[in-house]
Image 1 (cartoon, one colour):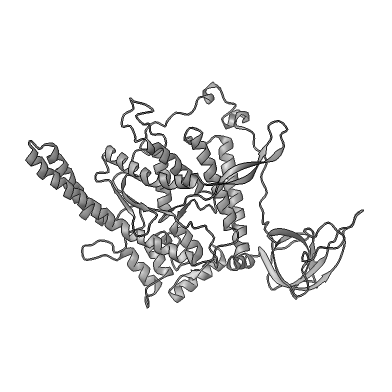
Image 2 (cartoon, helix red, strand yellow):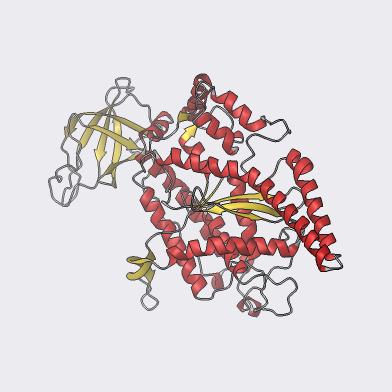
Length: 535
């Protein structure tokens, strides 16, 4: 945690209210996101109990599994979930716009620009907390390899046709959520914690109700008191006033309400199956219907407060202006969505259980590059974030006190003006250290020459501008700071460089899974069913 973040948390404790950690919105928020509030049972890892899902704030769709141990009921839940999620995804798959993409020419080996279709927008899934993202990833893994009756008529427990397709999409959303700065799948607690510093730990910030209590507490109630009530406050029946942000349930709810309700449902279903005549069957069916309604009401009582809290958090985030680089990161999300849409349409197999060495290395390099890009862009978009980088010695700002024109050595001398800057910051600069500033959205490079004076105690430093001044002998207008201008330079690069090109999977050494044999040409089959796959 940075020093400025620590100070913000201390100020939140003192004032009783969360403090802003950003002045702009650093994540894209769709005008019509799909909110997904899952609920799981405690007895079986990842077993769905129910969910609220939808794009309309006042009209969520309630999905319930009355008996989570019943495989047919679980598949019915997943099929209903697919009926909601897949049409939402398909609505973004058809509208495209022309775009250019760099590809390698197979004949010349050179990079060329080709025109392709790019989806004009992309779907966005929002879950309450990080645990919700983990559950989405688990659902994707457990669904994408399921066999349908059409694919394999002899498969036991065939899945509904749309379930494997939903699994592929959820896997893609889960993988994309691991890329820093991506907004296809967001955990609301993480987005809120990025923009506000509460007076509690990062782990406690994963409770959506407690985090909102710090950010927007009731009038006259300190955030700490409101958060404590959200975490442990219970009604006269011993149930939490603010259910956790899912997907896990409270033990008191499981033991006192849910377990007895499921037992009544099981008894009613057994009695209906044993009914001997039509009149008795009608009575037993009425009992079963009442038991189903009871379970549905219980699930809704645990998910609806979280659903309302998610939309309340979205309202708080939408009040912030969007950062300048957010649209660029969303464009990369659109490319990712378009690429997966094309793979599905082309009939490619589901994502493999394990990545090969080259794919894994590429993913790791991409995440590292995007993390550095995100940190740089957030600082450039947000003065409050830049203040933290300045406090850490990774950037500095000041007023230009003098500009002296100078030229580089060579047959065609290029302008290399010397800029004197007065600053109170103390950046970690060494001789000829490169520094950067944003000039028209592009990074301009300068070089640290030294301090005026012996120790730089007067705060005057000299920088040499190196590029972005045009091709003429005289710098272009506006490309060199003028006396009196206030400028900000960073020690970190604004654009991240790509790494070394990795070999094709077919050319990897045997130590990394290659060269492939005949077996590698066979598409990977479905995973064997394991405890992790069983919902």
